[in-house]
Image (cartoon, rainbow, N blue to C red; front, side, top):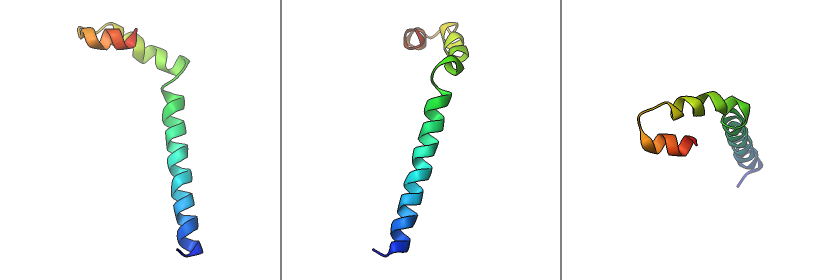
Length: 52
């Protein structure tokens, strides 16, 4: 494997880690509360249990 390929792979992994970090940040803490409250108001019992 050439050094260029190695750096491209590492760059791709870095981008993936950043995207996963952003997804985690958006779906945790105070930012997730509004979505969870909406899920509690649905008619779907399973969604309410998961939100609780």
